[in-house]
Image 1 (cartoon, rainbow over the protein chains, first blue to last red):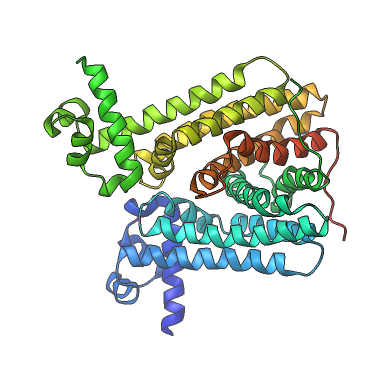
Image 2: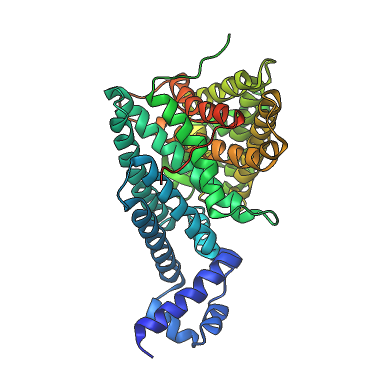
Length: 206
Length: 206
């Protein structure tokens, strides 16, 4: 069996093991057994537990980012692109709950893992910022919104998406589909942003 | 000097030290020196570095939660309560950047710290869920929104707020005030929620 195939099998087993037990508690013995290989072979290919976990974060993060990029990349109006990107995001986190669990857990495991997840987050935020800026421009809104407010909105949206992915995956029953979760966030953000670019603002009544 | 006062001084120095250097790199020597006490006294009062960090998380988390609870607790319409709660949240994270940095970093430092932050997050989400459910009820919206969608929206809002606090505190120049940051999120969420409870939905154009 080619090395590349073996490595993917090891990573599959590792993602499942880390998702289930966390970085500290996951056992290299169990991961090797689940991958159907010897433990020395895991160390030969992936070097160390830290390297193995890093490889899992890299693979799952790249896969998620690529899914969102492709989803949002279909040409169309910016709101449609955002909708497609959000659907792709939640479809991916829902179809790969172990991958999402690894990324969420990685963030809480100190360095170098936290920085890898932070970099994924920056890539996703940049993508959303572009879409929102385009949408604001399409709607002919003023320069000011297109700068600072768009940056804030993009951070809000990415934080909200991460939070919703965890919420959706953690529901035992009545679990929403990726489309439903994307619709919660789209309604939450787009109707708000739609009003914003039209110059409507929420105002305290007193 | 009473022990309680000394302890608060140690915690002040520890929060600053952990915020600046992180949990691993922060030095107990530096913390003791900044607090103007001997290192053995820090260990006598706070037991260990882990206990000291836990005490910092507890103090900063309780302080933030209390600020939001008081802010949101002023009686009035639910949107006004949410607005007050958000302003209190961003006023606190902005006035206590070291405290917020400790809470954000704690989440990435493994157990038992990650669980302490998760519990703070649950308390904040419960508070927001109550406000949104009340708002949905006030607006006479149907049962379904008042259950699942409100729970999703609350998670989205809390995730967005965390993300915005980091964004706001990290801006080197042109840093938004707590009120401005709260307004970004309020416009993002309330205009959206306002439309939602009126039965308006975002729909793909194709």
